[in-house]
Length: 547
Ligand SMILES: C[S@@+](CC[C@H](N)C(=O)[O-])C[C@H]1O[C@@H](n2cnc3c(N)ncnc32)[C@H](O)[C@@H]1O
Image (cartoon, rainbow, N blue to C red; front, side, top):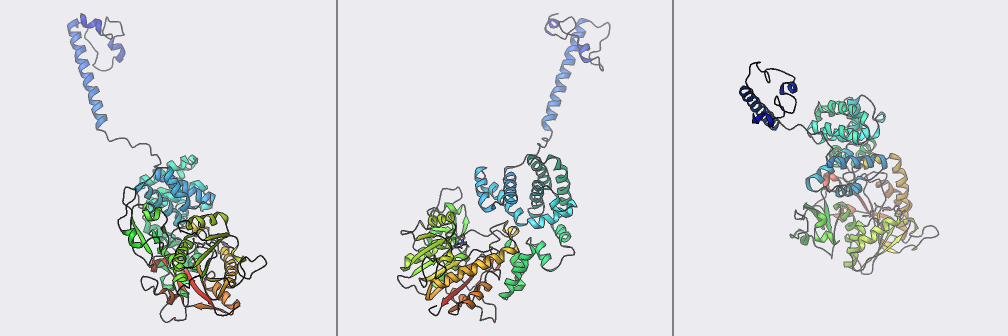
């Protein structure tokens, strides 16, 4: 029979018999001893049809099954965020400097870039709070957890409690991250701790973390600030008659600021920037006029760096509190042609650029000084957009005035001096997510001493009748009012100028700087929760005598 020759498995063919191959299981392949060759062939065909049908059914079943969950891999935004957090906690990197370059290297854009940013910034901002939750969930102190594993847990805790992401994605990817970070043997621990955290909601964990804690210690846990910072902010608010606003201030520190822009006078007008100029990005970048500075805008869509005026340096990203600080110096009294201005601590040059533009349009001359050469380079770059960029000196600001031998300018040289002093930056915690955990109370005393010496140099370099703006992006009293009080005591000819009154006609709205009934307060303290700015402190001072 022709069929037998073609089918290797058929009896009498070249291969083994079918029954042998099947091991004789079941009915299939069983034949009666008296089966004819035709019957056998028919049976083979039946079996073959049945086998084919079975195969097709199995294939169809496989196709209709829900896809098996792929082995969780770490998504790129999570990996980028973890790498940044690691660099911050292990190598003291600055997240705001590192993250943009890591996002660009990973090719993240749009929502993915925003996701990586929220993961990294949100985790770093609330680091102290997440550590408290991790201790409760793990039943051990965080300093007994391997640092890379602790960072995985912090990132996981933020996804569960700060971002409300799906627990399985947050937990599974954290376990993968643990392996990728070379801590494979801790993956069970990470899984267990994060599953414990995921069993309760954010409000429950907050209640647990703040149980038996009161006062500033409680606010510190609740708003993820070190306790000493809470206490310092309470004192600063109290000095401005606003102690009851402490919780609002702490909450504002945890909200990323809007991107504020300044239009440099004489080079760009705020109206030009809102006027539909389009750049190369897919979402047309735009900005709208808003905020407390007359030169200020707020980025509304797209990448602000792609706004043409920003791309060519005529407009800059700058906090509007910083804008008001520079304008308090340049606009609070008329400028006499030929005035000499000094920016004593200019790096990286944000306020110097604004002052240089103001000087250029009023006939004054600006000199900028910066201690750190690399930062002096940034100042030069910031000033490059001006037709005649001001000179930038490199050196210690304490060399100005009639200071020690080596004084470079002698006394009574300048009509206006900006002293935007090196400080703790406790007023800019919104934009530097890890900063609050890096500062130490000891930093304050050291900086306050330097601030006092720089202010002495500024007083000596100021001509009688001239104007100083003493500015810090910290509201800490030891860096603000106490430095000013010290200088007023040391320099009998120095007078505090009513700074709230000076700012009133400059700002776009009533800043309500002076607390009710305190007409004697000459300082201006801005606040994130009240003004949408960093907590800039501004004190104008003048010399009434020839010292
Ligand atoms: C708060 S920042 C100034 C910010 C700047 N005004 C701006 O708007 O971009 C203080 C600067 O003072 C510099 N600095 C620190 N000690 C200094 C000193 N002894 N003399 C001069 N500059 C100093 C720091 O390097 C830093 O660049």
